[in-house]
Length: 180
Image 1 (cartoon, rainbow, N blue to C red):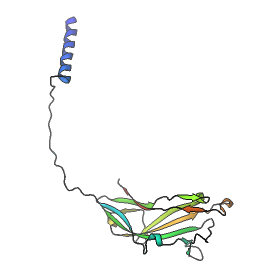
Image 2 (cartoon, one colour; image 1 turned 90 degrees about the vertical axis):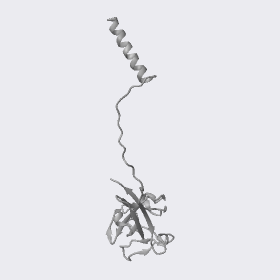
Image 3 (cartoon, one colour; image 1 turned 180 degrees about the vertical axis):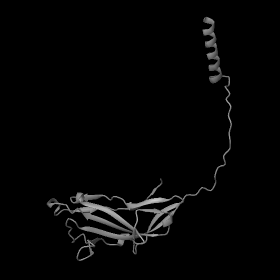
Image 4 (cartoon, rainbow, N blue to C red; image 1 turned 135 degrees about the vertical axis):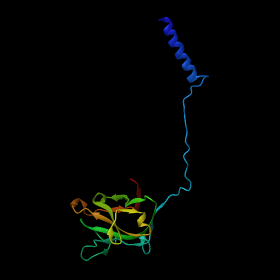
């Protein structure tokens, strides 16, 4: 039994020397060369403001559906009541190229500060050729999208929102590329 234990230890030591030391342990291997690819080019995704005079020059309208319809909102003199909706409409040209390009369109959340901030919500709706749109693809390259941005004074606001003030910061109309 001693000889067999010594034999096992000697064999284990020999393998250890071959694997970790001066010897080599050979395995069969093979390699197949797979051709690479040249000329990989990325697509594009961009919105360009095409609003006459630029979106920044378009004024806000108060309650486009209320009577009188669509009066100009003047921050120094217009006073909102619960349920009022401010809106601004701008147009954007879409650049969208890419074999599998798909993107959502939306509005980034602006900062809203002040004592009326919690009662205000900013949202956006988008149309292309008069139809609602929430995603764009490379088929929309060159299309015009109309964005209507709204700031809504919560219609359920109570008396605590009287004589309050808020500032709505810059917002962004965003394209966010998605890939399933």
